[in-house]
Length: 472
Image (cartoon, rainbow, N blue to C red; front, top):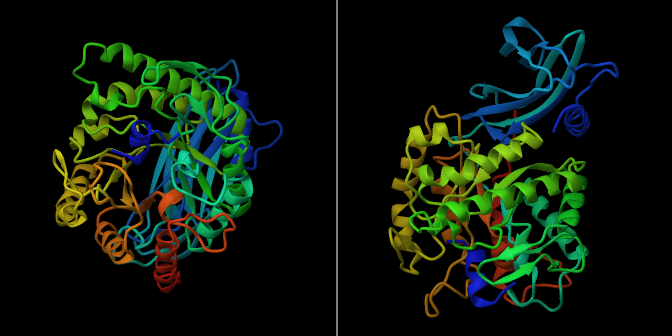
């Protein structure tokens, strides 16, 4: 379980021509004004990457016309030459159709600075993209550092994690600047609403089943989502936006309950509405990279009844933008389930914070640490050949258990270092959860009262600088 799920109990707070035109502008495509095709592109992971992964190039094609449109897409390393082409496909787009083309580019033997050259022809039009890629020589699939971090917006409230005063937009900008300074290049916002109240000016109101009220009011007086995206634009960072739990904090535990079909349907509809509203409000931000499905479900086959239709709704907005989920505990999964899933990235929670072992919180992180090698080995085996990305969701907190699942605090860095060094052997990217209460850059004039968050950040910063990747 995530801390956000516990805050409720503790009282803490088509596309068509338009899609193509926006996506083309956002991603830097060169598209002739008379082009009949509109395209978007996203690289997963966003980089840098090691020389032990396959980089996915996601190419969105759209035919806004009224007649079928023949098209082809190709991807090259560094130069447009036959010997450097790593992908090529031909297809025909039906009138009004959008389609995702996925190209896989192995990085083995390519340590250094490179360019992926993507060319799309549709009818008489040509679209081209030159994407810079840093490939780092590595002994492990993932870099041994945090490339991404999670941000729980409710944790910005001093009533959740004590601070001198209420958080402002300037505080958030300072936070992202500090994270960027230690090599963090993407941000996962865990939810844009919590218990029906939003972190941006939403027009959505709905009934919160846990609180028994119709909600829609904002949590803060400023637009948290706009602030984060604007800061990330300036820094060249990438942002996933979490859709929230839509007023049903325990959906992930309701598979066997009689009202599961109704609750699932409500959750799908609300999550899809939130995604559409976010795209309408914030789709012009270059940093808007993808979507996070906030409900954390362990049984992935059964969870597909929620995950798949919401992922489809997100992909309908921008097919190239990936959808991410973070299975909790010790998830039930296999290759067939993963292959059939409509989700693109699985960031497995390492569950170290509360010392989770199957069916039980021990509040002893070492109990979970002892299981991590087997867990991530199993995840990696299940992911082989599925076309799904395997990331780690590494926990930057712990609890003493004296008050149950509550009162989390920053851990010593030695434990975090061991998590990093173990998990990077199995996944393609490491992310750390979360930064609002446990991982704070220095120099803030509104610091967390718990100084251990700055101690952890300082120790990690020293570690990360010593391991700053050098391409050749």
